[in-house]
Image 1 (cartoon, helix red, strand yellow):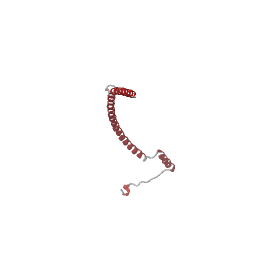
Image 2 (cartoon, helix red, strand yellow):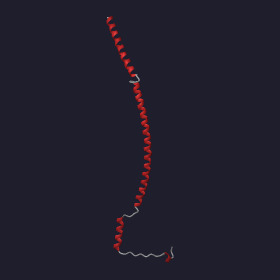
Image 3 (cartoon, one colour):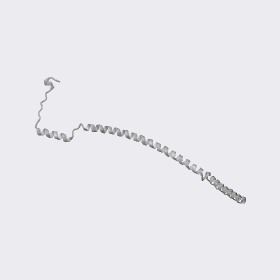
Image 4 (tube, helix red, strand yellow):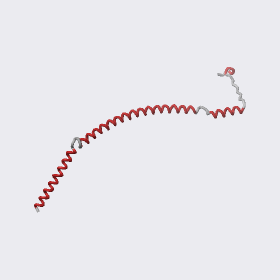
Length: 125
C-alpha cells in the first residue's frame, strides 16, 4: 500500500513539474518585448499618440468651422434684416391691379373739377 501511494505521489510531482514548466514557457513568451506584452504595449502607445494627433487636428478644424459658421450666420442675419425692410416697404406700394381699377373708375365717372385757392390771394399762409 505504501508503494502505491509513493507511485501516486511521484506521478503527481511529475505532473506538477510538467505543468510548471509549461507555465514558465508561456510566461516568458508573454513578457518578451518583441512578441509578447511589450509589443502590445508599444503598439497601443503608438496608437494613443496617433489618436491624440487626430484629436488635435479635429479640434483645430472644428474651431475653424465654428468661426466660419459664426461669420456666415452674422451675414445671414444682416441679409434677413434687409429683406424684412424691403418686404415692409413693399406694403406701402399699391398693387398694379388696384391702380388700374382706380383709373377705370375715374374715367367712367367723367371729368373731375377742382378749384384751388392760392394763399397769396386770400392772405393765408
